[in-house]
Image 1 (cartoon, rainbow, N blue to C red):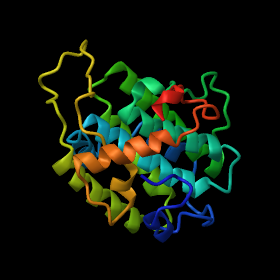
Image 2 (tube, rainbow, N blue to C red; image 1 turned 30 degrees about the horizontal axis):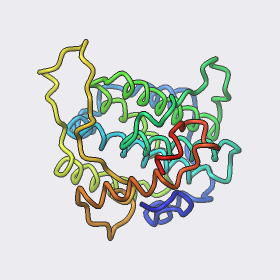
Image 3 (tube, helix red, strand yellow; image 1 turned 45 degrees about the vertical axis):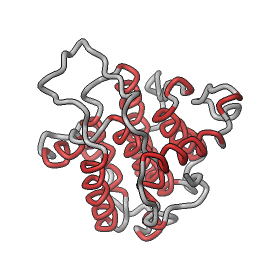
Image 4 (cartoon, helix red, strand yellow; image 1 turned 90 degrees about the horizontal axis):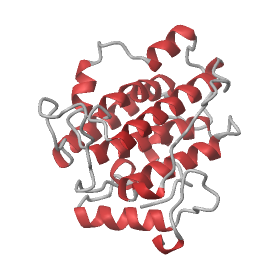
Length: 241
């Protein structure tokens, strides 16, 4: 499982790196991305059809699209990278991660085409992390806003749409949701520990061939290379490496 130091080919092809910030941005757009209307039923259905761990992997992959879009435009890019690392770690070793807290005092910059999308992305990921920690059965549907944000900020949207469609199709086939929404109790917490893990290569390496074993090895290698001393969202012990 490769590190996040090199931009994936699909993100480069979508012209997300160093492209001018030329998309429309205002309060109304931001509001729709924070709280998407209920007219994205097809997307939500696709998301709720995939497993818990696959949803976390997709969240990390989507946040990486935002990371590369803004990497050279904000001082917070390193922190975003650390959040992505923590998301991947949470798939195999959730006990080694700390909460992805963000803007607890609601005073972080949130206006304009740079601070606005970054705020939406990090707040969205924060909510997904909260749902994960609570074992919420509704985690998957929370990803809708992040998908819409990446699509809105990506220069070549058709490239992103094709990537998303392909991955959702494969996720539905290889990582189906392990429960039905009609069967659970709101007071119950879901435990995804028995689900197979998913790795970054699944989303970004066109030559990667998924197997349960290859994914486990990739995640283990990735986690072993993380620096828990410098990443504020990690807390795993030295023996984890």
